[in-house]
Each structure stands twice: as structure tokens, then as C-alpha cells.
Image (cartoon, rainbow, N blue to C red; front, top):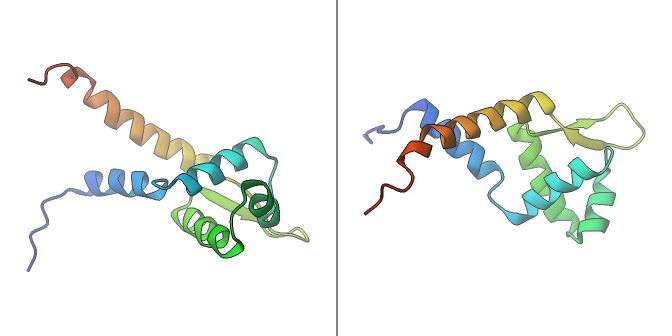
Length: 107
């Protein structure tokens, strides 16, 4: 039986960082921010990703809730889930702000 030494907040922060821990995911997010509701084809074409690779990363980002799709259109389009994005931004900012006072006190 493994000991659970990490609390829920720590696990959640780690999950948020993991969700964007690859350059491909960061590129996709930046592209979605810069482009009005792109399609998967546009993401594949403009970022030079393989179709399977783009699908995998888009599904991961969507499953985590950072992006969402507009499926009522003839073609599936991607956009940011602004509510979730703001929640994660607040969580990360709080994490960094909480530890700011410790900076510069090493060795």
C-alpha cells in the first residue's frame, strides 16, 4: 500500500503543468489563441504536425478542458475554454506568488 504524501492542491497543480508540458501542445495553444476557431486541418497544415500527432494532442487538451470544440458547424473547430483557462491561470499565479518571498534565499 503506497503512502499518499501529496495533497489534492499539489496534484492539481502538477496536472495543470503536465497538460501543457510539451512544445507541440504549447504551439497548438498559441495557434488557437492567435487564430479564430481553427480547424484540425488548419492546425496540422500551419504547424506542420502529423495528423495523428495533432489529433492526440488536441484530444489531450480537450480532455483536460483547456480547449473545447464547436461541433454544431459543418467542420469541427477549436477554441479556448476561457473559464477553465482563467482558473488554471489563477492557480499557477497563486503558486508562483506564494513562493516569491523565498526567492533569493538559496545558499
